[in-house]
Length: 295
Image (tube, rainbow, N blue to C red; front, side):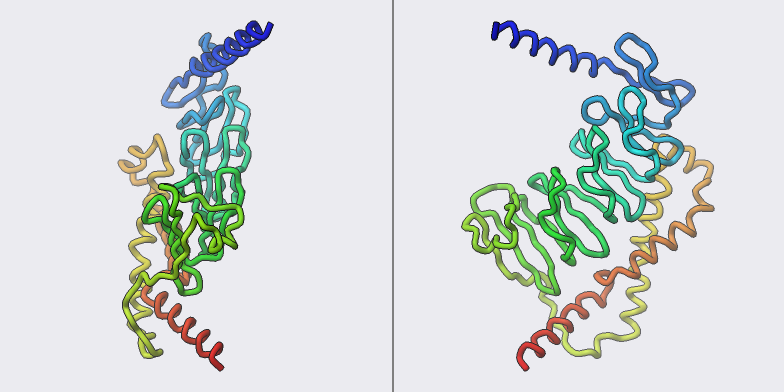
């Protein structure tokens, strides 16, 4: 009896996966739809782009907006986002400007859409960015580090560096090749599997308020031009998906450029961690804290 049940379960597994594998994306008049294994139309060809997501779901593009549907055409995530990216095959990063979230193939927001950006880190972690501060979450949606840090990066899979209130800290997982932050991150310094070190990343020494010159402000204004331009090009070009070539040839993106550039430039100029004044400001804050603590 047990063998019979096992065989039935195995057959159901293979039938389910074959059925999904044979679901095909087809094209008609430069639009895309979905057919089942028998050639029946499940989703009419109304999308500019369809990308398979996990088991039974698809990232779709309609005009310049993205969302998620299932293989029956039901909308799982509204088609309202300008940016879309598939992550590890079964997750989708969707967002506009300050509402990036991470969705699974059921349309569930694993990481809520409240961030300015999301990026993949080593060890199954996601770098989150909100209100000019960085944090870390995992693929279950659990927040490992709140968005309190000025910078976070991983020079090696088992090392994470974090900047907090002008000081740099390094977390190294000494008994593993890949860093996995523990549930109790606040007490990580007492965890024998990790080594936490206060480090110096930028060795330049500047002191005094005289460094805050008019020239520095001009440099900050100029230094924001190139990143803002690159972000604008990404926004107007890469978000067009299948229509990128037509966009380039016809120059229909030009009227949108000034407004998009102004928005991205404002984002960079407002960022307190951007430009030549950032390090000086942090050093001055540290000096003020040390002075107040010595009084």
